[in-house]
Image (cartoon, rainbow, N blue to C red; front, top):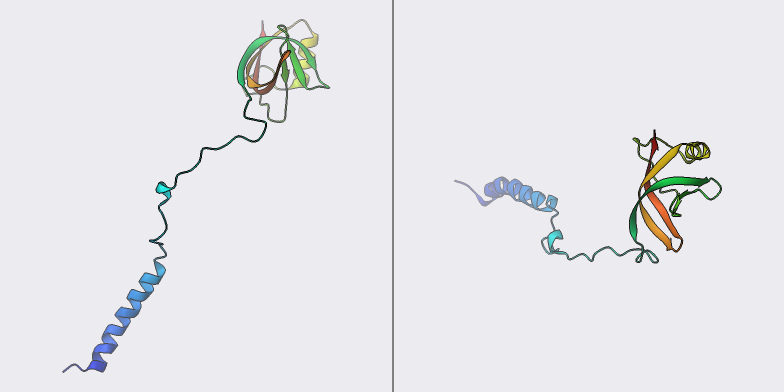
Length: 135
């Protein structure tokens, strides 16, 4: 015959295991699902909302090392910043090397994209620029 005390000893470990399993499951059933949260689109920092991205292409005319800029033959100015990247496949890998080549009679083509700083004269904060030496 099974007594109440004997049954309690057999059931108690199962109850403890069930309570422990429930405590380990930390899922909050009252919290909304992540998929149901509507997120607002990212907003641009102040002063950045009217920036225009522009692709450019042209022949390098002069290099101003002090201003960290390149002037193309059409009068456009490419302003180099800390964010400007020159890809690995470019014939020229630095502004100083470009300055040395521009001083000689070598034709160098610049191509890339950037953000328009001013439209008259056209000044572009270069995001990425690649250079090709014409042979």
